[in-house]
Length: 72
Image (cartoon, rainbow, N blue to C red; front, side, top):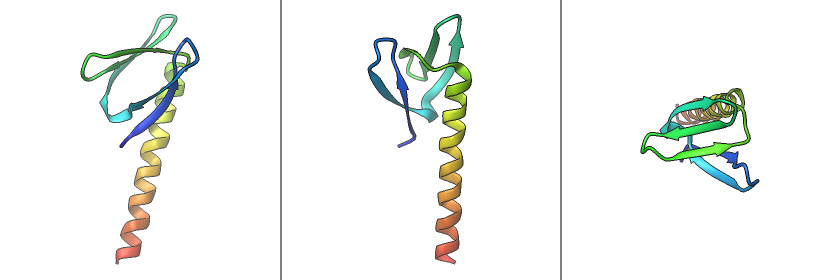
């Protein structure tokens, strides 16, 4: 799964599927809105979440390249 870990305002952690994030709003709290309509108010900034998603995708691409090299 494509999970990133975020922190809710009450300091509990939640893992969300990065591919199912529809949008992120910040005014002033950061709200992550999922494709199914679920909303998470989190401590991370919009920039933090975008960075987490980009980092996750970069790791996936890197692993795919390693796998491709190993099989060819």
